[in-house]
Image (cartoon, rainbow, N blue to C red; front, side):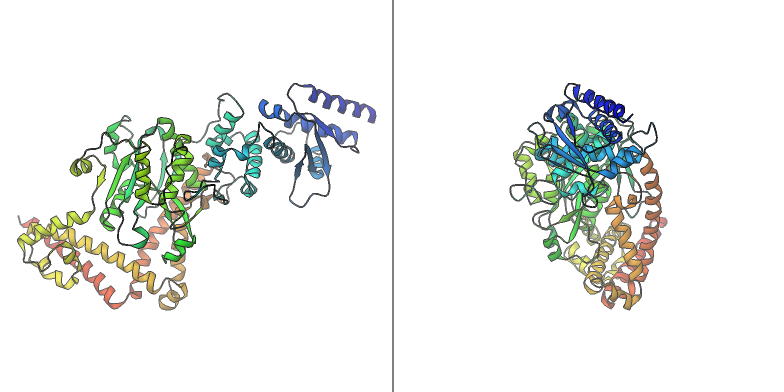
Length: 604
């Protein structure tokens, strides 16, 4: 009987070797007949999953052995056309239930280990070399350096990884991903760009894909929204703009800020130029340093202590933040991208949103560098162009020099650019207009709007009581601006006086716990993968993960809104008397002029 089993095993292995293009294997001596037969079945099953180009590249006999002395956690090793596998995998393979499929744990473990080592052998061949393929390195996360030659040694695409071991090196990344590429039916849904690249490298025809979850899911960071999830259909993107926020006098903002604007069409509008009018549907991709401790530090910005993450923000929120709060202009420059490049850019942005947790460096990995890398990695055509810059306005200049911008339809005059949504002017120009209206009606002491807003609230109050209808309307706009300015100053004072050390807050007002919880939720909205840490899956979230995610995001959005209201009340005693008086005085002024405006309007 033993001889018969051995003969059958030999026949089965010989048949596997006889198929044209199938790898040839040599088993180590000392295996029982049953073990040789089981090994032959495993080898045949694994070989049957290899693309023809991969099989053909393995053109030498491969020695296969089972070992008891591999280090803990190591399931196999590939060296010099030989593979050593953990014997426990064979034992589990042989103990499987009859007819066990690929989803059986023992089947999956043995196949994954063998395919992983076969991937290493393939990668070392002349036809392989995937770990040295520049395009694969782009997609994998070993990104190019903007400030010099070469690539970053660190791979920061650590979130929602199928196996953290893939981040050890490009070689391990290739081996881990080829396992999943061959074994996971939904790999193309979870890592679509990599799946497409591997298909092309193996010369495989376009294949029918499994049903992926619709669209690309983003989670915004909007305190006003009860459900900041956004499902993006790339086909609804008409154009992509380079969005540049002008610099200001703050050290961390002097160079401006780089963003990308996705011009998304309203659901009922055909994709075309009129989509530029659908501002409420546009999405802004903005790399920002997430300051989880609230205290903004220039030194930490220089040394990479802050995470750099991709935020997906509503266009209206971005316009309000820069033009009305920070008083910075926004310039939106259309990019000349093909339909395929727009789709690839959107997919890459989704990958970054769910997988990337980088480090912010004020010089070498700032918003301009991150935006350049997004463009570089999304499009091979853009990757071949000299676009790298560490300055946001420098990146715009490089894009123009390389012919990547499409400004033929942009009006030459500022008024036309504003009407067409290519230029969003800072609100200080509007404030000067409002101040001129009020000054024609009232004897105001300041020379301009900036001087008026710098006055103490008590000095502005008499004019608010005396204003007529037009003057009150103008002063209402200015008092709203004054309140936004006071809120910025309040945050700055809290950062400088208290929030460097949470224990100081605890001693002063006992709100360290609520504040840290608020920051924790802020971290989740900047790094959405944290909501799915206990849910199986990797890459882009699919249907089952999205169902879990939806409930968690909505619940945390509601919690954060409640926390904001509570913290606004709790932190007021922490302010200096002068700052608290300015804040409360401005709030009182705003209520005063709002009431007067209503009275005057009702009396007409």
